[in-house]
Image 1 (cartoon, helix red, strand yellow):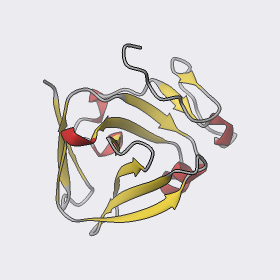
Image 2 (cartoon, helix red, strand yellow):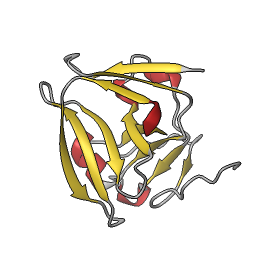
Image 3 (cartoon, one colour):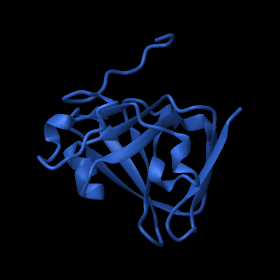
Image 4 (cartoon, one colour):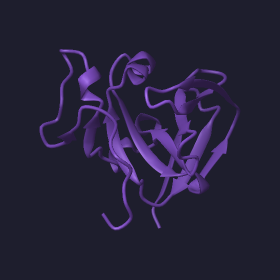
Length: 140
């Protein structure tokens, strides 16, 4: 089974998870743009496969979907590492850029492109959709 690890900028928080992500996407929603000044690249993993070491702080907001989103950050350096939706607590979003080897996961889709700035660069090899991607269905 594949194991991946990562950390925040200062190293005070580290994590690892096993298995392949459920999905990997570039998100262009307004919230992600506020976090990163760009789109964010995210892997969706099973929450049960994720082990976190170190202290995190959190910020909860309501997404365009109406779901509550808990974003978690390192208390020392402020690196944004994880997010969880009230609609799908069994999954955790991991910021791919925080992985020790970010090239080990490649995004397959751009989401929320309707919110992207005019200067956004989209990889032509990735699918793109206007809003939120539908949940993956087992076997598809």
